[in-house]
Image (tube, rainbow, N blue to C red):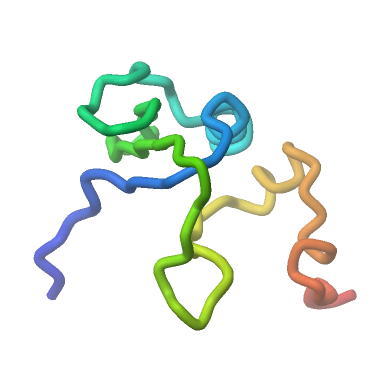
Length: 102
C-alpha cells in the first residue's frame, strides 16, 4: 500500500508567467495564492488545486527539457470528459486518435 496520500507541490518552468498563470487558472481552475511568494531567481506565481496541492510557476528565459532524449517536459492532469468539453478541447484532435465507438 502506498504511503503517499498526494503531492505537496509541482514546480513548472515557463517563459511567459502571465500567459501561463492565465492558462492554469482558466483551463484547470487553479486558484491564485500569490506572486513572488517563493524565493526564486525569477518571477513566480503560486497556484492551488481544489485538493490542496500547489503549483509553482517560475519564469525562465528558456525551458530546458529534463530528459535528454525528449524535447518536452511531461506532466498530466486528470480531467473529466465534461471538463474537456467545457473548455472546448477536442479530445480526438488532441490525441490524434478517434474516440472509442466512433
